[in-house]
Length: 392
Ligand code: FDA
Image (tube, rainbow, N blue to C red; front, side, top):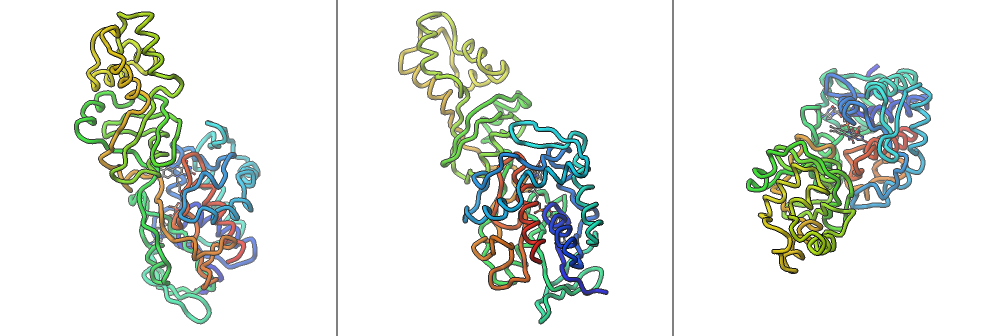
């Protein structure tokens, strides 16, 4: 009884979805995972309430070296499809920001949904099982595991990326890809807070916890969402989003007043209230503690009437294009996702199988498809899991 039609390595979002889908097709399915519990990342996601999809998800919400790859799977299993599943299980949910769907109660509801579906579909899940080696055999694959030798016809790698190693993340999916001669694209942490150079970090650390809406630009991307000052640097949705586009050495350009033209405002204010100060102007538009800290960082003093046009131009520029060179990111320790991974040019966009080895599949975060913040990463896990589950 150690032979299965399908073995899936990884009992996370993608692996469990794939297991249920293949199980419903009558396939004998086994999911293996080295962690003590399945779906750990689901449980910690969305602040414990799992942002399980995004109704506005489109391929434009994904980063990949091969941007067209994700289109087919996302089209064939949509946010609406997952929402219907959620509703069939009677899970209460709510829309937070536009399109972002969260559990009203707990992320446990989504994990229970997946485990129930696996149970109904007859898919077996074995936790605390490590895979020591995978070998190709005539009929499929032979796996040496901590629970003995297992064989299968189809092998699905759903072992995720490198983010949050304490939750069971490992590079095993990449090792298997390498073993079978697949190309890997360089991996790096995404959706991750920035760390700052010591000088700026020291100036901002005392106001950690302050948040303000900004428009941040880097490379050709920009995100207009809140920025959060932390005791290590900068976080919040805007910074997490742009971190996926940032490379070491890049500067971020932050518009602190995206709803106003700061330079024009300052010219008008100098005319109307020449005694007012830049600090007073900032207090009107930004959280007080941030306004004061930002004013001090820039050493803006005295009434506006003492400012020459060129000084106001510089102040306006600083407010609408504050240049920050992060020292780095917090890395995989806190990153929500891993960018890069298995190069999708070697995979079928219909089945997620390796093009010249159609019984070996790669799904979820281990492949080079990474979503924006807001439920897109789980949508990719569901869609790629279903695509492989319908074929494996
Ligand atoms: P996932 O990482 O979920 O699962 C991989 C599984 O493989 C794990 O169970 C692991 O133990 C197992 N594994 C790894 N190596 C193995 C080995 N060698 N042998 C056996 N098993 C092995 N996304 C979103 O859309 N909405 C959200 O709200 C959030 N929130 C969020 C918060 C935090 C803190 C994090 C870290 C991430 C998110 N995400 C998110 C991202 C989301 O969690 C992520 O994209 C999916 O979990 C990826 O699903 P996978 O199934 O591919 O990997």
